Length: 310
Image (tube, rainbow, N blue to C red; front, side, top):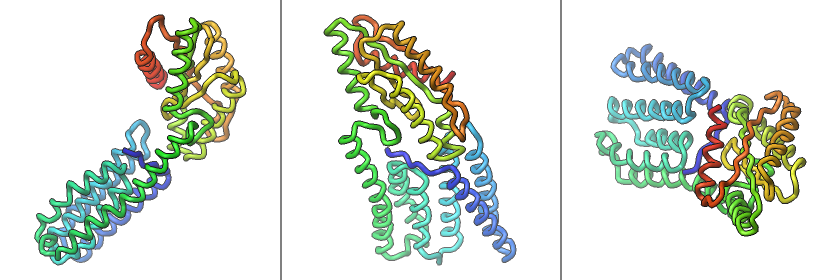
């Protein structure tokens, strides 16, 4: 399921506009004296305010306020169809479009396909011509096709390009292949192998507060400093969003610790405009004798998670 990346400022604008529209709709119903329909828009306005606060707040998952916004969209359209049977079925396109704008492709497809039969339980929708069903399915497919094509192109690019799309480092698939090769070579030649796990705690914060450009600047600074201070056969790869692995072939534990100190000192001297001094947490992880490769991968992933939770 592909993740939908939308800048935080754009989402803040979307939440603010939704609050303004919903509050304006509630005020219009109040001015028209339609008190029966007033309750749902008023309650949805409060929910959207909470979604905006969750979006601005730190430490919350970004999909939570998006689900709240989507729930409000579905609730308002559903209440409109329920109280106004003469309403045009064209308004079914609003929650369909909102789902594809706010959610990943897989989740949007599941929600729209699952909600499709439920819409026809409403008398106003059930009385519409059969062409409405065709239009509902066509709109769902048309909105899904661009996202699917984008995901397909990204998968094709990843299969042909070993580098990460955001920085000068290998992506996770190539990184694991190179690490596996070095792991087997070290075992066959009785050589040592070390991996440094690097975590950037500022990365997610920079993306949320300053946008994708600040995130790219942090990634570029890290890759530039690491690649300029390592050997040609050392391998730097991006294991997760904010976690990197630096594979050091033919390197002992003491050598890995020296590399870690050298990188810590160099990265601490790197100062960026938005985030200030670059912060990096680095730990060494060496394979144990007779350890299987998959178990070593799990230890590397656990070390990265431990650095992220410090």
